[in-house]
Image (cartoon, rainbow, N blue to C red; front, side, top):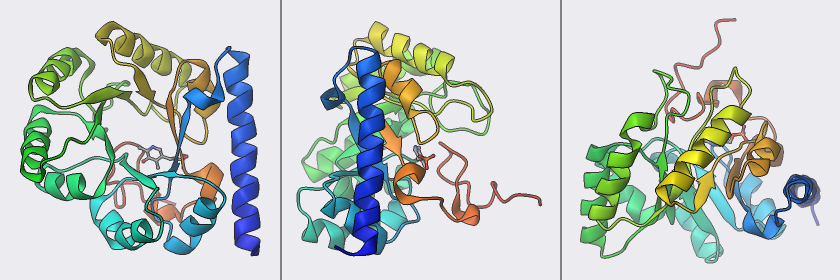
Length: 244
Ligand SMILES: *Cc1c(COP(=O)(O)O)cnc(C)c1O
């Protein structure tokens, strides 16, 4: 084993232990929680050790970056699944359908139409989460809370398979109330899955019902500051540049 693969295995194992703990505290089984390793900004050399350590679900936030790095990796590891967790532009819908197994960021009718059309053209259905702008933040992606029932109805009409709801709570606030609200919305809509929780708050998310946690930093280490997006915006490369 190389140093990289030992480190990757250790990080994954520590994370799994911590997932187990959060799950068992609330009487849940860790088997019911999918870990999505968010590998944005990380190259194949950082991803491969994690696959070798047993991780099988990865997440990316940009279509272009994923097109550059994943086709080769997926040929090497055909059993790896790839999820899109970042904002999606309607004109990239067909590219996204070609590359990803799950889309977490369906958040508006125009994107729904583009995805439905791309899925019809490709002859396959890709399951989606509806992303909710749970903190009503102007700069963030996600469907406004009030518009969620209509978007769910439209998705069902378009024969899009809906897994659940996804959200990124406001970064400056205690996340628990937002996770609880998302869980309540999913329950009311009869949606079984909840994509919520990142490196800083996945334990809280698990205790409030998360079925899909999206973890980057805790598995891969810090991302370069310039490339750290505003969570959920998917295009924060410029906006997030620190002033100091
Ligand atoms: C980057 C990102 C994550 C992972 O964030 P970490 O804090 O590094 O765990 C999760 N979800 C989305 C939508 C992201 O963009």
